[in-house]
Length: 132
Image 1 (cartoon, rainbow, N blue to C red):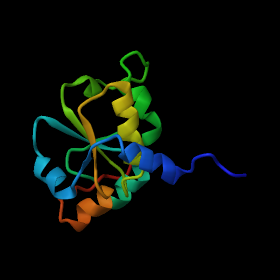
Image 2: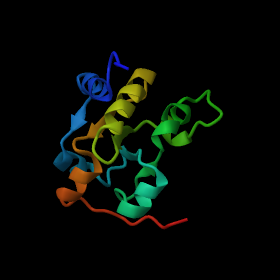
Image 3: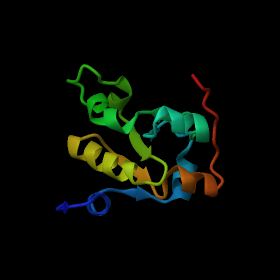
Image 4: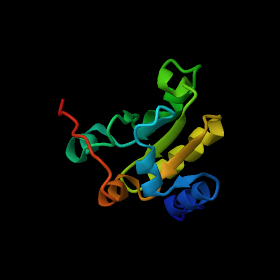
């Protein structure tokens, strides 16, 4: 089977239309009342690797449902007048998520270049997540 567009094509297309924040700039925004860090990784990844301190966890598969105020799954955090900085492990899911959020009208939105891996490599703070 040959796909019309593979995941790399989708990521490249998303990155052409969204804002990608350099890791150092994202680290500098930590603690701002105007910013919500949104961790798109699943619970196992959070428990294993930790997260950006204070980040809101939204598994990638629920993002559109949690953003939409008409959805029965809506999360009020997405109705706040904030800047939303998305991240995942390597900035693949976050590129697609940022594009989807932008297309839905959430904003301003951006994602962190290189994802959580780059965050840790740059010395960004990490908090542990308790196992359930």
